[in-house]
Each structure stands twice: as C-alpha cells, then as structure tokens.
Image (cartoon, rainbow, N blue to C red; front, side, top):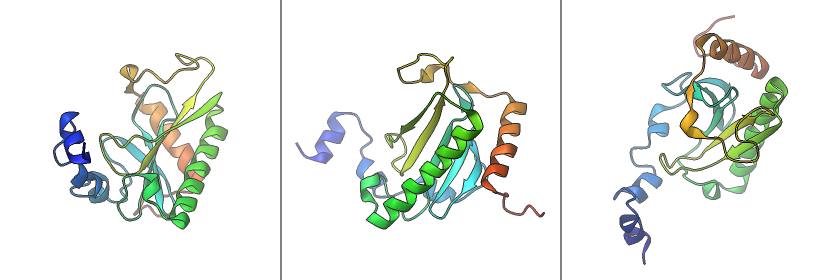
Length: 168
C-alpha cells in the first residue's frame, strides 16, 4: 500500500503529504510571534521559540517550535540543525525544571495535527494524575490568569527574553 492510499484509508486529510511538505503550514505562516491564541513566547533561540501554554493540565507546559526551514520530523534536520534544536529544547527543559521543580519532565513530538517540528515539554509533579502514565489531556484547562502572567514574567527573566518592541 502506498503512503497516499494508506493516508486515505486511515482518514488522514487527503492533502496530508502536501502539509508535511509545508503547504499552508500555520506555524511557518505565523512566524516568530511573541504570543498567539495558545501561548506566550518565553524564549527565542537561534533555531527555536518556546511558548508557555495558556491551557494545560498543570503549570509548566511549554511547546518548543523549530523556526528554521519547514520540517515535519526531527529526522528531516541535518546533523547541525539537529544538534542546535535539541540543545535548545534541553536548555528550555533545564530552566523549566529549575523553576518548577518537577518530579519528572516529559517530552513529546507528535505532528499529527500540525506537521511542523515542535516538542511538547511537560512538567510532572508528585501530586499529578496519573503518576507513571501520560497526562489526561481531557482535563486540560485555562490556567488562572494571574498565575500564567506571573510565570511568563519569571520565565522571560530566567531566559533573558524581552518581547519585540519592549524597551529597557
């Protein structure tokens, strides 16, 4: 079975391979914004941006987005791009762990909805549910505004990030 017929038989969008190739990619089109409907940028690296997510199961959920040429999979990166991307993902995760003091940090790459390389970095806590299993995304909620805004300020300070157009 070819990739094209496999995509159709599994109810993947008929234009899936065009999307993977970058056609109409919302993350490429959006560019390196300071905020969008999902989150607020807390880190701008050489090849990636990290966004603290407004909706989460618990605090400290960040998505790190590749900002080079369009790629859908980490295997699409050349060795230099790969080294830089993973170094930035780990830098973000390391600082999040210092800030939130989680029991564990989880890393997820899917791309099933938006086929543009991005990594979900999730803090796991001793009191989260269910320990030892993936987070129950059905419980996702908007974080309290004051808590979210406070985390954004603190994390931007940690990363030394100032939003575009903000003076000293």
